[in-house]
Image (cartoon, rainbow, N blue to C red; front, top):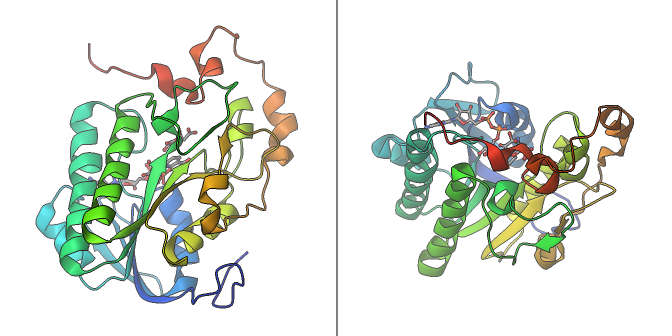
Length: 278
Ligand code: NAI
Ligand code: 15L
């Protein structure tokens, strides 16, 4: 599915001159870089890792997000930033700090200095991972991060709010569930976000006007849910995919014992990941 210039749910042009995509060599970046071409004349793709050669309609810029000068150059001339880059799992703080804390700060400061008006921030469900799997929450629920990774995403959401309140830079913070080709286990049957739905979410997050800073859970139309997205209805996100197609396979695996924290909390195995090196 591709949403293009005429998407009636948005009612505004869904195309701009240049999108910056960070994390372009990662799992989601590798899938989304081609899809983002529908929404811009040029997609500037960037990563610390090798993102390969530039494809048609792309500029490739290798950049460490913790390098302030490099990030300022990276952001120059872009209209919107889709910020997927960073450490994406629980890791020692020494790894999270430069990529997710310094790196996301660099992105916002560069956005301010270069006049970028919209950021799409890949936050995570791990901002609220310590809610129970028997609870349904919305984005107004108090944060309950399940690790330092979740805390780093909460920091990013805090930056997003600050840069809107002070400078008017708008952000959609996407608390992505589990965005993979398949829902591989019972938890992912609830948290799965299909790639077509992710593309729809990115499109709306880039182009729906007057969002201020809003937080939206990135999850498909799965049978069971832990997250209520109604407060973010101004984004008009209407998922069309469902994890139901993976249910038989996921449920053929033995369930985790009920006492396992990974089976009790929304963050799953993240709630017991780390600390490292004790
Ligand atoms: P990934 O780990 O596959 O990709 C992240 C990319 O960021 C990597 O290519 C890595 O090289 C790059 N990166 C790391 N540190 C960097 C630095 N200092 N400078 C520049 N680039 C750096 O992660 P994935 O799955 O593609 O996720 C993308 C984003 O979405 C991440 O921010 C992740 O936290 C977030 N997210 C993803 C979810 C998912 O289910 N895939 C769920 C929730 C959040
Ligand atoms: C995340 O935040 C991670 O980036 C991703 O790799 C998955 O582990 C996902 O959460 C999840 O909760 O399944």
